[in-house]
Image (cartoon, rainbow, N blue to C red):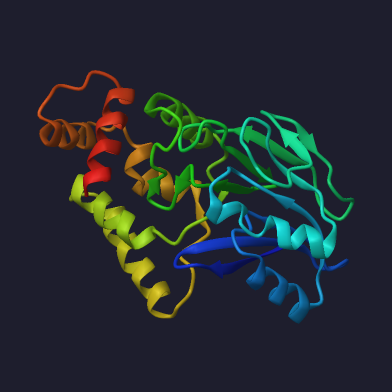
Length: 256
């Protein structure tokens, strides 16, 4: 069974290491900084196999050059984004067999946060970069609200036991917004308590599950009547479709 660990970087980034315990081989997801990754590899005597990139932002790719120089690794990432060191450009739905130590990886096109953003599905584990956060979603930094809405709907259709490994520790701030949008949502109130307990112990709030996101993440709940009414009240206009609700909700979060 694979083991997955979060490597902290910068203020709130997580770089994910996916390890096959039998071989000690690891996949590296979104290494914005090489130093903490190299430290983990050395301390745990790991053998890096490849780097997987979800999108082009510097806090996700900044460690590529140093890591590939030291370990001569292949780099997989979105074909439509400019990523220095990319060796294997990817588009939607290829099935990757990177190393016999790891299962087949499904690549999902999830534009919106950026125009070419992709996600990696490994067994029941989704590595979604900045598209889907715990109780939130990414800002629009290259894609459109419609694209991001449809990307999130695609992720929401995965099995509910899917585990969500996003790239930032934004959960507490996202839950404060979620509670503002849906103040009567009991699941959100419970998640606030559970997350606070984890963070007080300096533990990651991740991974979450898709089931938990569907119950507490406002950006996956744009078809819910109470949420729609809340967003309409904030925006001051009638919103006729879930896409319109999502667009207004994303704009609200930008101001929160």
